[in-house]
Length: 175
Image 1 (cartoon, one colour):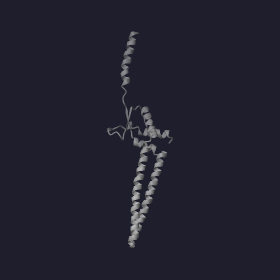
Image 2: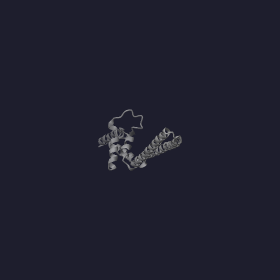
Image 3: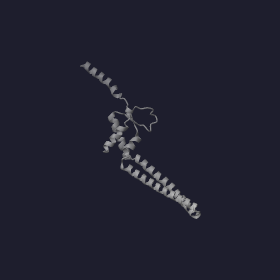
Image 4: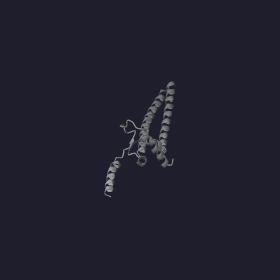
């Protein structure tokens, strides 16, 4: 009985180091690809795309108007109506300045809205939870963002969980 107790103790003590020496497995993910693939179908992104299209339509309309004014100015100059040409030139200058400012402001607003979309707390939490779930289910201890980790010189495609996370997010979203 004493030998059995000693053998059991030795076996138990020799097994402890093997349990504590778990290999750390790394995975990589392309977060921007996850965001663009999964998030592009959301209502917030569709709203941004509609707003962006409206801004572009306004820019196109104003550009066409400026082109018409420039043609009218050339016609006035050709016919010798310098007074009309000067009025049109002033109008062109004013509308060109307005178009530049409009474009600058609207572009900044759209970029800000796009940045807020990609930093949405609820969305980021959902992606984080899904990364955690996939990593744990596949036995990874660490997941690195491919696009922000300049230290990654090489990785095997077998550790890239991007597609798995995207598929899981799409499945949970019912798509």
